[in-house]
Each structure stands twice: as C-alpha cells, then as structure tokens.
Image (cartoon, rainbow, N blue to C red; front, top):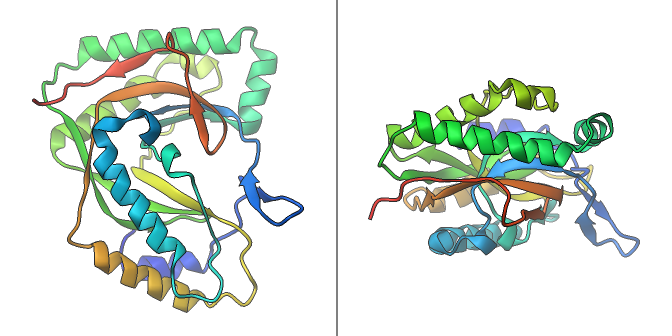
Amino acid sequence: MTLPEAYKSQIQHIQESTKFQPTPEGIRQAAPFPGYTIIAPPWEDDSYNSAFYKQLQDYQQQLLQLSIPYNPIVPLPAKSFHFTLADLIWESNFLDACQQIPDYDHKLQSCFRDIFQQYQQSINSEHSIRWQMLGLMVMPRAVGVCLIPKDESSYQQIISLRRIIYQNPQLMALGIEQQYYFTAHITLGYFGEIPGDLDRDRFSSVLSQLNKKWILDFPEITVKRAELRKFDNMIQYYRQPDWPSLDFSVDS
C-alpha cells in the first residue's frame, strides 16, 4: 500500500467523500454520519502519545502543501486523529437499528462491558501494544498513514480483541456485522471535489516523493486503552465517563 505503484493505481480511482459537504460559501464541513466505534483515545484525550500525533500533524501539513495545481484533500482536525481498533455500526444501519431495537445505546454499552471483561479474563499479557507508522496510504475517498505492529504480541492482542467482538452473538443481534479484514491506519483527510483535469500521474508522483521523505522516520503509538465511542460525524468521537473501556498493559 505504500509503494509508488500502489499510489499510481489508487489515484486513478479516488472519489469525492460524502462525509464532508460544501457550504454555500464553498467551505467543506463534516456532514452527519452517526454511529459507534471502538478506538484508542483520540489525540485530544491522549497526552501519552502526543509526540506521535504531533508528527502526524506535521505530515498532514505537508500533504496540504503538495506542489499540484489543485489539492483535493480536506484535512481532519488534528485533535480527532485516532487509531480505530474495530469498526462497529454507522449511518443507515445504525439509524435503522436504533429504530428497531428499544434502548439500543444502553444494550450496546452493556454488551461491551461483558466483551471487555471477557477479553481481560482470556488474555494475560504484560506487554505493551505498540504500532508504528509504515507510510502513506491512499484509500478510495481518504488519505492516511498505514500502521504495522511493533511485535507479534502487539498484533495478537488487537486481533484477539476483534475476534471476541465480532464473534459475540449479542452484538450481532444489535446489527454489528463481522469484519475480520483489518487494515490498521490513521486517517489524515478525505477527498473533496476531484477536478476533471486533475493530473493524477503528477498527484501520485508527489505523494510518492513525500512518502520517501518519511521512509526512515517511523513514529510509534502505544495503545493504552480501547474505548467505546459514539460519533455524529467524522470529527467528533465522544463518550461518557461510565461507558465501557479496556485498559491494556504499558511497560514501565
């Protein structure tokens, strides 16, 4: 995903994201896109990984300053940067589930209290969960950075959590679909309007050149917690103090 050939291929198929819509003044703002997710705390709530996120913010600024005639990248607020551990439910599926299942939010929260407890009982690890940035990643409607596990334990702990989540029958009954395919990443921005005359070869070339600048700089993130968070759009991820969370080991 971080090779020049991948950029060249992906850039041919990028599309405008509906998650950000233009105002009458032409400024793109986050559109309604509600749901739930399991994430490590976003930067605004994670001082432990502040140095890591500060580097991502610097990378984001370099993306916005690419030497191309029209840059279609709509940046995310840096404070919302986060590592998604397990996608749950969103948009129409979420709205339908809320209508069909009484007291949906309470049932989902209760379910994750059980899931996190089950994880703690089944996984006995004293090793930190550490992932590192591998490079730039181009998705159909967004751009971000790929993450790879620092060691086998870091990988297995996240995969084990995802397995427990997606195999939970109570969660399935709440409309949560199994998603075993996992591409660890942090999104830096979405694509806005794609001009018809966008020089896609030039775009992929400057992305590749930028990625080479980062090639020897692999900042690390330590995953200290997994939290159930609700979102109304792609820049607001919130929770109440009594919502379920899972604390991981952190090496001293």
